[in-house]
Length: 214
Image (cartoon, rainbow, N blue to C red; front, side, top):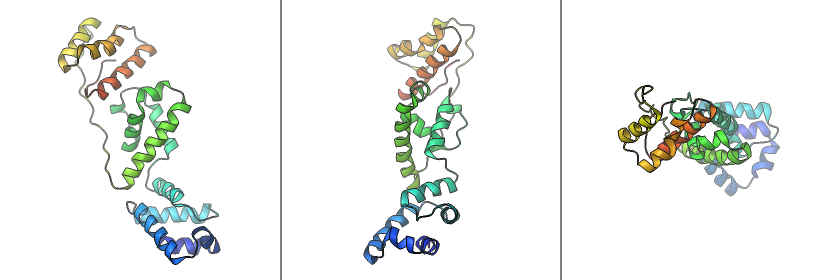
């Protein structure tokens, strides 16, 4: 159906883009069928309508997949990156528009997205996004993590007491705990927030899921 529509839309341009060899056409149709399998018929139809209205030449399979992702409600890699960069605190509690964005951001590192230049983080995010989207298109399901349990209100404790309590409550190795929980000794402000976010990411990567005090 897809190739019949493309042939009707583009006429001679279709032959120029895909050739007219029967053997080559069979291989091409097989690749397209595999790539399009996870998408619904309405999404394919919307992508074909976009081609008819906006593209002078038949799309490549990569171009058509991008159209399908948009038609299926998925963001582009660029908009996903921008959303990931807007997450400043508590990624688990952030209102993600799609789970794949969270997992791509996790692959790059939230601390990096917040502190490093775009020219360093964007290529890594785009690569992670493409890898994850390939898995998503193949039918893999991605979930958002459940909110981590919050620590009790310890504002009456000193910073040193809070550090010791967190280490003991969650069984954190002392070296790791004292390395990252030192942010509690800082006064309030942006620098403390940045250190807290770095600590939250470090503990998560070490397998500890809990919410640090602000």
